Structures are given as C-alpha cells and as structure tokens.
Length: 226
Image (cartoon, rainbow, N blue to C red; front, side):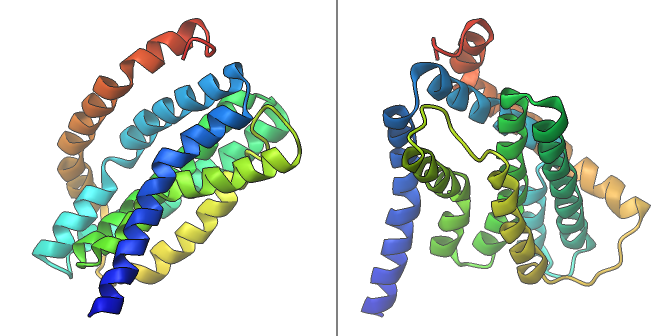
C-alpha cells in the first residue's frame, strides 16, 4: 500500500511539475519572439483542438462511467483517431510545402491535444487518476523533450516541430489499445456523439478564451508582447 502511494504520488508530481517547468525552460532557451509565439500557439491550439474534437474526451469519460458498452465510447475513439491522423498529416504538409513556422507549431500542438484528451479521460474514468495525470500533461512532457533537443542544438527557436505528431502516434497507439469497446457505430451514433459533445465543446472554448484572451489578443500585434 505504501509503495503504491509513493508510486502514484511520484506520477502526479512528475506530470504536474512539467506543466510548471516546461514554460520556464522555454523562456530560458528561446528568444522573446519564439517564446511568445509558443505561448500564443498553445492558446490557439487549445481552442482549435476543443472545437474540432467536440469534447470527445468528456463524452468518452461520461459514457464509460454510465455504460461501459456504450457505442459513443467507440465513436469518440474512432473520431479522435481519425481527427489526429488528419491534423498530423496537415502538420507534415505545412512543414514541407507551406513552410509556415506558426502554422506547423499550432497544428503540431493540436495533434497532441486531440489525442491526449480521450486517453486521459478514459483512464481517469476507469479510476486510474494518477496515471491519467501523466497523459493529461503529455503536451508539456513532449515539449520538454523537444526543448532539450533545441538546447543541445544551441538554437533560440524551438526545433523539430514535426516530432509533435510523431509523439502523438504513440498516444494514438495507446488510445487504440486501451479504449476497448466493440459496439457497432452508425450515422445515428455519430449524430448522438456530436449532440452530446456540442454543449461541452462550447463551454470548453469559452473557458479557454477566458484564460487565454490576453495572450491571444497580444499575439495578433506581436508575439514578443506575449
């Protein structure tokens, strides 16, 4: 019992500390422009991921608690995996053809948020709160790894943006393996999924806007101001 408590405590402290440490590390490594761009991109990505995902994580968690055999669980899983693949592909295309640092950064971060939310929510609903916090903080854990590579390359701007979707592929594999539900899905199931998630999606976007509005507004003028 003691070892389990220590283990869970370590997971919780490790995952939550990355949320605090990663921005400090970014501010130490990146110049003002690229640090501001990172903070702005994270805010935009939270908005974009919340909008595109239709709060799939919340729907999956609610349905698992209420009925573990609900077809909405599989619908949320399949939709999240499909959406992740689309956004991940757009990240690579942006990096190769469009050559937009800002767009690639936003899409890369969004790909992680889209896939981490259903996985974390499902594990949390299964009663594994400590493990869920690790996936809750996946973006910042991956960000710290990318910042480490950036530091080793002595750069003042974040490098290897396309590794965000590569990290996301690991999460997608876990989503496919961990979320086990073989219920049949149909067009009606998809419509129920959208109907269930829409109010949560709207409230989630309002919450993100409330906390991120200063960064979003300042970023439209100059990311250095962020």
